[in-house]
Image (tube, rainbow, N blue to C red; front, top):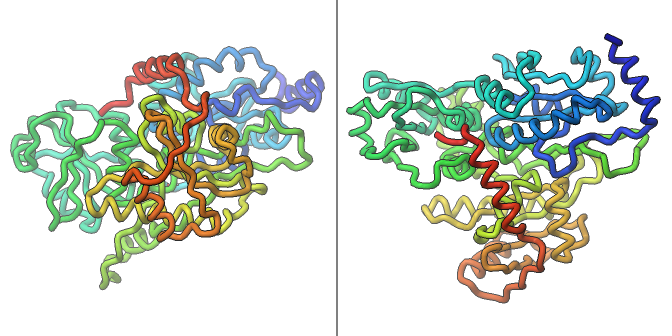
Length: 463
Ligand SMILES: *[C@@H]1O[C@H](CO)[C@@H](O)[C@H](O)[C@H]1NC(C)=O
């Protein structure tokens, strides 16, 4: 086989400077360069599969449908990513990764230390099912299997952390609960108890399986989760008790570096996801290392808003025909990699996070609020459709797909909590005028049927 450098050379001679990737912006496959590989894959607590490919390679093109299907089915459970080795900026990186032919698929599993994952070649069949099964197998398992005998002992460990207990009839640990344990690693401890552990089942009053119970702390009553047994709503529920980690899915998987639509630039840079407002994660981890130095109780951290990083997630969360009210913070697109968000954007994010948090403390569910990064192509399309063309500006909008209305937060000078909260309250109370949603924003039923099918195929997305 030719060494990769000569392959690449031949390739660039053949296709000239054109290095368009094979995955479009709407693809569920996360597109990476060296830098985003480091932050999103090598430093993640998640397992990933990464395809190293070249756009001119026939086997890469024929893998695409299966790979995208695997990405959809693994959404929320593991990362599915691709590196276009034909791009100049990626060539040295593909060489370093030992890529000798295309496509090369590598599974990256977190090691003991962040940044030092185990990387192995994926040698299995190139079908969605084989890829999904192999990756699911490698999702780290931080879920304690507890019995009547040792549940109390486990509850007594890491006293400051809330505990989540899944009661289930199954003897295996589902991909979904393992993924949730990864999201809250170090923040919420997760255990699984089988239905035959009669004393525990009785103690928590569990009557149906599976059931998810949270024990916020030793002196607070356990709470039964009553929502849908799906990733996003469970993540939001658990998020009331502790902030998920930075790489929790729904938040971080957004560094789309696809430049297929843009002109070649002399020095291409990766687009990074916009920074989230500071959370108190740091304080928390310091605490757990030095339990003695904790004389005062820290105020409960305010979880940041969940992020809708991709056009797909925006659509399925808020723009599906049956979606109810969502509040969206449409962030400006950062002009430079690593550019700070303008203060209006961080104000808007922190105001809404605080409002959401206040409601959850009262036990009231507010309609969901999401942060939508500027790189999300769905956000760009939505702005255009709603006439919010100036994408340097942050916008807060409320949108209700089912009822076909939307509202814009009009006070561009003031994203402080008081002003934003009165706008939110007016919506809650049904006050004020709503705009009619223009045609074409809410996807048609056919697309929905297709998604339903994809969901039905996602056999791992259950507890
Ligand atoms: C990985 O888990 C640790 C807790 O063990 C957490 O502190 C860290 O933030 C997580 N990393 C990411 C990138 O989320």
